Length: 356
Image (cartoon, rainbow, N blue to C red; front, side, top):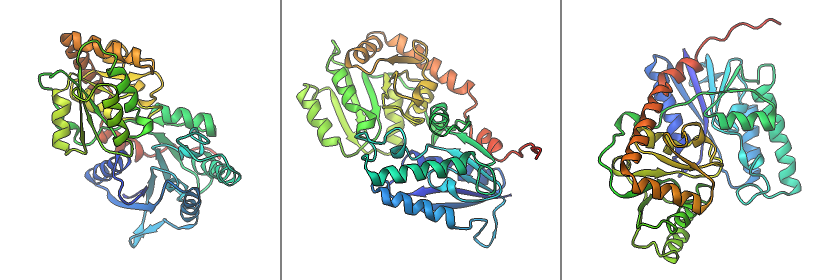
């Protein structure tokens, strides 16, 4: 089968969405199919660029690509899923959130007449592309997490099914003897809430250490906050690290903190589980709540420094408890059939015929 995998790319960015696309391309190819990756240029900052990219996807014929017919098109992100194809499947990372749940907030587009018009148009295209009928509509819609399915249902009235996938290098994660630090890996940005973690760490009664990995626009502010809170000797900002360094930090951590605001999926949760480490997350963190079982594989707390501090202190004071919760997390991951073979089998399965 000739399979097209359509997504978007922004120069200079290679994060979770790109890892997912890379993994899917490799898995479909490994299953014996010919793969064509279709990448649409896309910039997130300007609303007008979203409209132009959407128009490009709606108007371009991707039935033929690289000299041959694409039998099945799998689309991942806005606006790639607007591409017309008679056998289109969507595996949705998320809708264009700045036009939905983040609209009008500090994290989304400002509420202006221009963005209101574009927001309405995006909503219309989504309903046709994801939940309509005809050649431009998806034959099946999956998402990367129940949280994404919930948003799609809420904003567009479209049903879908969550289809989990493993993080990159899943087979390389391991568990080593724990050292007394909390690992906090992620991009340094407001939605990831490293500031919340720092304020919680400052409230812990014992000198718990932390390693914060990743880079981003808030690094300078977070380092300043760390010093302001008196944490300079307890927190290491290691910046962008290699994959090998990341695996080592996971392996030796006592626990992992990942408390973003309404995350879509969150590889960090799965990476921690594969490393046999308990995860501390928050009740409003979205995707991680599909994997972290409070008191069994980690802790789910209120997004408040005092509540997070209590969970961190409990794990640090009882390393045997942290080890047991981490082992439970690894067992839960293995029981959930989070494999690329399951993803490919689902996305490429023949659908039952529907009566007219």
